[in-house]
Length: 256
Image (tube, rainbow, N blue to C red; front, top):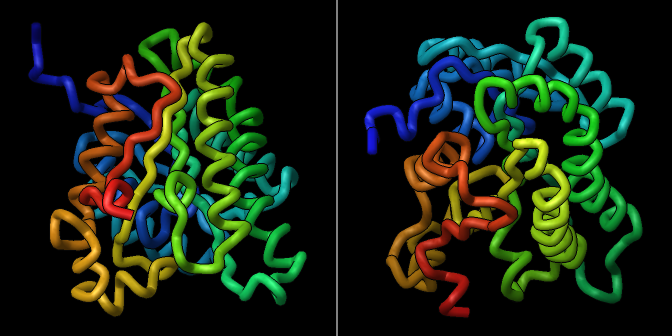
Protein backbone atom coordinates (compact mmCIF):
# COMPACT_ATOMS: atom_id res chain seq x y z
CA UNK A 1 0.00 0.00 0.00
CA UNK A 2 1.56 3.28 -1.19
CA UNK A 3 -0.08 6.35 0.34
CA UNK A 4 2.51 8.81 -0.95
CA UNK A 5 0.36 10.14 -3.79
CA UNK A 6 -3.06 9.16 -2.50
CA UNK A 7 -4.29 12.76 -2.32
CA UNK A 8 -2.22 14.18 -5.17
CA UNK A 9 -3.87 15.86 -8.15
CA UNK A 10 -0.70 16.34 -10.16
CA UNK A 11 -1.26 15.96 -13.88
CA UNK A 12 -5.02 16.44 -13.62
CA UNK A 13 -7.29 19.16 -14.97
CA UNK A 14 -10.27 20.52 -13.06
CA UNK A 15 -13.18 22.80 -13.91
CA UNK A 16 -14.95 24.50 -11.00
CA UNK A 17 -18.15 26.41 -11.72
CA UNK A 18 -18.84 29.33 -9.43
CA UNK A 19 -15.11 29.27 -8.73
CA UNK A 20 -14.48 32.97 -8.29
CA UNK A 21 -15.69 33.15 -4.69
CA UNK A 22 -17.02 31.23 -1.71
CA UNK A 23 -16.85 27.47 -1.59
CA UNK A 24 -15.95 27.24 -5.27
CA UNK A 25 -12.88 29.35 -4.74
CA UNK A 26 -11.89 27.30 -1.68
CA UNK A 27 -12.05 24.16 -3.82
CA UNK A 28 -10.12 25.72 -6.68
CA UNK A 29 -7.41 26.84 -4.26
CA UNK A 30 -7.13 23.35 -2.78
CA UNK A 31 -6.84 21.71 -6.19
CA UNK A 32 -4.09 24.11 -7.22
CA UNK A 33 -2.13 23.37 -4.05
CA UNK A 34 -2.46 19.67 -4.82
CA UNK A 35 -1.00 20.15 -8.29
CA UNK A 36 -3.98 20.33 -10.65
CA UNK A 37 -4.46 22.71 -13.57
CA UNK A 38 -7.65 24.55 -12.64
CA UNK A 39 -10.21 26.39 -14.72
CA UNK A 40 -12.76 28.49 -12.87
CA UNK A 41 -16.02 29.76 -14.25
CA UNK A 42 -18.36 32.49 -13.03
CA UNK A 43 -21.02 34.67 -14.58
CA UNK A 44 -19.15 37.91 -13.85
CA UNK A 45 -16.17 38.09 -16.20
CA UNK A 46 -14.29 40.71 -14.22
CA UNK A 47 -14.59 38.83 -10.93
CA UNK A 48 -13.69 35.55 -12.61
CA UNK A 49 -10.60 37.04 -14.26
CA UNK A 50 -9.50 38.67 -11.02
CA UNK A 51 -9.91 35.48 -9.00
CA UNK A 52 -7.98 33.43 -11.55
CA UNK A 53 -5.16 35.96 -11.50
CA UNK A 54 -4.97 35.82 -7.71
CA UNK A 55 -5.16 32.02 -7.62
CA UNK A 56 -2.45 31.76 -10.27
CA UNK A 57 0.07 32.47 -7.52
CA UNK A 58 -0.60 28.88 -6.38
CA UNK A 59 -0.47 27.18 -9.77
CA UNK A 60 -1.93 27.13 -13.26
CA UNK A 61 -5.37 28.74 -12.97
CA UNK A 62 -7.46 30.05 -15.86
CA UNK A 63 -10.65 32.08 -16.15
CA UNK A 64 -13.58 30.94 -18.31
CA UNK A 65 -16.47 33.35 -17.63
CA UNK A 66 -19.87 31.86 -18.46
CA UNK A 67 -23.50 31.89 -17.42
CA UNK A 68 -24.22 28.20 -16.96
CA UNK A 69 -27.85 28.70 -15.91
CA UNK A 70 -28.87 27.85 -19.49
CA UNK A 71 -27.92 24.93 -21.71
CA UNK A 72 -26.52 27.41 -24.21
CA UNK A 73 -24.28 28.87 -21.53
CA UNK A 74 -23.15 25.41 -20.44
CA UNK A 75 -22.30 24.55 -24.04
CA UNK A 76 -20.37 27.80 -24.40
CA UNK A 77 -18.32 26.92 -21.32
CA UNK A 78 -17.57 23.47 -22.72
CA UNK A 79 -16.51 24.99 -26.02
CA UNK A 80 -14.22 27.48 -24.28
CA UNK A 81 -12.66 24.74 -22.17
CA UNK A 82 -12.15 22.51 -25.22
CA UNK A 83 -10.07 25.22 -26.89
CA UNK A 84 -7.51 24.73 -24.12
CA UNK A 85 -7.79 21.07 -23.09
CA UNK A 86 -8.62 17.80 -24.81
CA UNK A 87 -9.92 16.03 -21.69
CA UNK A 88 -11.28 16.76 -18.21
CA UNK A 89 -10.37 14.88 -15.03
CA UNK A 90 -12.52 16.70 -12.46
CA UNK A 91 -15.77 18.63 -12.86
CA UNK A 92 -17.08 20.45 -9.80
CA UNK A 93 -20.69 21.58 -10.18
CA UNK A 94 -20.60 24.34 -7.59
CA UNK A 95 -22.43 27.29 -9.18
CA UNK A 96 -25.66 27.85 -7.30
CA UNK A 97 -28.32 30.30 -6.25
CA UNK A 98 -30.66 30.80 -3.30
CA UNK A 99 -33.93 32.63 -2.75
CA UNK A 100 -35.80 33.37 0.45
CA UNK A 101 -39.37 34.63 0.82
CA UNK A 102 -42.40 33.93 3.03
CA UNK A 103 -44.53 30.98 1.92
CA UNK A 104 -47.51 33.14 0.89
CA UNK A 105 -45.30 35.46 -1.15
CA UNK A 106 -42.77 33.08 -2.68
CA UNK A 107 -42.47 34.00 -6.38
CA UNK A 108 -42.24 31.76 -9.42
CA UNK A 109 -39.11 33.63 -10.48
CA UNK A 110 -37.43 32.66 -7.21
CA UNK A 111 -38.36 29.05 -7.85
CA UNK A 112 -37.27 28.82 -11.48
CA UNK A 113 -33.98 30.67 -11.07
CA UNK A 114 -32.83 28.44 -8.23
CA UNK A 115 -34.02 25.18 -9.75
CA UNK A 116 -32.41 25.94 -13.08
CA UNK A 117 -28.97 26.67 -11.67
CA UNK A 118 -28.96 24.20 -8.79
CA UNK A 119 -30.49 21.14 -10.47
CA UNK A 120 -30.74 21.56 -14.23
CA UNK A 121 -27.25 22.96 -14.71
CA UNK A 122 -25.33 20.17 -12.92
CA UNK A 123 -27.10 17.58 -15.03
CA UNK A 124 -26.76 19.23 -18.42
CA UNK A 125 -23.26 20.61 -17.89
CA UNK A 126 -22.10 17.12 -16.89
CA UNK A 127 -23.90 15.66 -19.89
CA UNK A 128 -22.18 18.17 -22.19
CA UNK A 129 -18.76 17.59 -20.60
CA UNK A 130 -19.04 13.79 -20.53
CA UNK A 131 -17.08 13.25 -23.78
CA UNK A 132 -14.16 15.14 -22.21
CA UNK A 133 -14.50 13.17 -18.99
CA UNK A 134 -14.50 9.91 -20.94
CA UNK A 135 -11.22 10.84 -22.59
CA UNK A 136 -9.59 11.29 -19.18
CA UNK A 137 -10.54 7.77 -18.09
CA UNK A 138 -7.75 6.23 -20.16
CA UNK A 139 -5.36 7.47 -17.44
CA UNK A 140 -7.47 7.20 -14.27
CA UNK A 141 -11.04 7.57 -13.04
CA UNK A 142 -12.69 10.88 -13.93
CA UNK A 143 -14.61 12.65 -11.17
CA UNK A 144 -17.80 14.72 -10.99
CA UNK A 145 -18.46 16.41 -7.66
CA UNK A 146 -21.80 18.13 -7.07
CA UNK A 147 -21.99 20.74 -4.33
CA UNK A 148 -25.26 20.18 -2.47
CA UNK A 149 -26.15 21.48 1.01
CA UNK A 150 -27.24 20.25 4.41
CA UNK A 151 -30.50 22.08 3.66
CA UNK A 152 -31.23 19.26 1.23
CA UNK A 153 -30.90 16.72 4.03
CA UNK A 154 -32.55 18.31 7.07
CA UNK A 155 -35.15 21.06 7.33
CA UNK A 156 -33.95 24.59 7.93
CA UNK A 157 -36.14 27.20 9.65
CA UNK A 158 -35.37 29.61 6.81
CA UNK A 159 -38.06 29.94 4.14
CA UNK A 160 -35.83 28.99 1.23
CA UNK A 161 -38.22 26.55 -0.39
CA UNK A 162 -36.69 26.26 -3.84
CA UNK A 163 -33.15 26.11 -2.46
CA UNK A 164 -33.90 23.23 -0.08
CA UNK A 165 -35.84 21.35 -2.74
CA UNK A 166 -33.09 21.89 -5.30
CA UNK A 167 -30.36 20.57 -3.03
CA UNK A 168 -32.40 17.52 -2.05
CA UNK A 169 -32.97 16.93 -5.75
CA UNK A 170 -29.25 17.31 -6.47
CA UNK A 171 -28.41 14.64 -3.89
CA UNK A 172 -30.79 12.17 -5.57
CA UNK A 173 -29.53 13.24 -9.00
CA UNK A 174 -26.00 12.47 -7.81
CA UNK A 175 -27.03 8.90 -7.02
CA UNK A 176 -28.69 8.40 -10.40
CA UNK A 177 -25.81 9.89 -12.36
CA UNK A 178 -23.33 7.85 -10.36
CA UNK A 179 -25.00 4.56 -11.24
CA UNK A 180 -25.18 5.50 -14.92
CA UNK A 181 -21.59 6.74 -15.26
CA UNK A 182 -19.63 4.42 -12.94
CA UNK A 183 -19.35 1.67 -15.60
CA UNK A 184 -17.67 4.29 -17.81
CA UNK A 185 -15.08 5.00 -15.11
CA UNK A 186 -16.65 8.37 -14.26
CA UNK A 187 -17.28 8.62 -10.53
CA UNK A 188 -20.01 10.99 -9.34
CA UNK A 189 -20.32 12.09 -5.71
CA UNK A 190 -21.41 15.16 -3.76
CA UNK A 191 -20.54 17.37 -0.83
CA UNK A 192 -23.18 18.86 1.46
CA UNK A 193 -21.59 21.85 3.23
CA UNK A 194 -23.03 23.33 6.38
CA UNK A 195 -22.31 26.82 7.66
CA UNK A 196 -19.40 28.48 5.86
CA UNK A 197 -18.65 32.19 5.64
CA UNK A 198 -19.64 33.00 2.05
CA UNK A 199 -21.63 35.61 0.17
CA UNK A 200 -24.46 33.11 -0.13
CA UNK A 201 -24.43 32.36 3.60
CA UNK A 202 -24.24 35.87 4.97
CA UNK A 203 -25.56 34.71 8.34
CA UNK A 204 -22.54 32.48 8.92
CA UNK A 205 -20.24 35.14 7.49
CA UNK A 206 -21.55 38.03 9.61
CA UNK A 207 -22.75 36.20 12.74
CA UNK A 208 -20.34 33.29 13.05
CA UNK A 209 -20.48 33.08 16.84
CA UNK A 210 -24.28 32.93 16.90
CA UNK A 211 -24.36 30.23 14.24
CA UNK A 212 -21.59 28.27 15.96
CA UNK A 213 -23.78 27.94 19.06
CA UNK A 214 -25.99 25.51 17.13
CA UNK A 215 -23.10 23.42 15.77
CA UNK A 216 -21.89 20.51 17.95
CA UNK A 217 -18.26 21.17 17.04
CA UNK A 218 -18.68 24.77 18.20
CA UNK A 219 -17.57 26.64 15.06
CA UNK A 220 -18.50 27.32 11.47
CA UNK A 221 -16.55 25.69 8.67
CA UNK A 222 -13.24 27.00 7.38
CA UNK A 223 -11.60 26.65 3.95
CA UNK A 224 -9.53 23.66 5.05
CA UNK A 225 -12.70 21.74 5.90
CA UNK A 226 -14.04 22.06 2.37
CA UNK A 227 -10.56 21.58 0.89
CA UNK A 228 -10.14 18.25 2.65
CA UNK A 229 -13.46 16.91 1.42
CA UNK A 230 -13.01 18.16 -2.14
CA UNK A 231 -9.46 16.82 -2.49
CA UNK A 232 -10.47 13.48 -0.98
CA UNK A 233 -13.26 12.92 -3.49
CA UNK A 234 -11.25 14.20 -6.47
CA UNK A 235 -8.10 12.18 -5.75
CA UNK A 236 -7.28 8.47 -5.76
CA UNK A 237 -8.33 8.44 -2.12
CA UNK A 238 -11.98 8.85 -3.13
CA UNK A 239 -12.08 6.45 -6.07
CA UNK A 240 -14.40 4.00 -4.31
CA UNK A 241 -16.91 6.64 -3.13
CA UNK A 242 -19.69 6.38 -5.70
CA UNK A 243 -22.99 8.26 -5.47
CA UNK A 244 -22.51 9.28 -1.85
CA UNK A 245 -22.92 12.74 -0.37
CA UNK A 246 -20.25 13.74 2.13
CA UNK A 247 -21.71 15.98 4.86
CA UNK A 248 -19.28 18.66 6.04
CA UNK A 249 -21.08 20.59 8.76
CA UNK A 250 -19.50 19.99 12.19
CA UNK A 251 -22.40 17.75 13.19
CA UNK A 252 -25.14 20.35 12.71
CA UNK A 253 -27.36 18.09 10.60
CA UNK A 254 -27.61 15.57 13.41
CA UNK A 255 -28.40 18.26 15.97
CA UNK A 256 -31.43 19.67 14.15
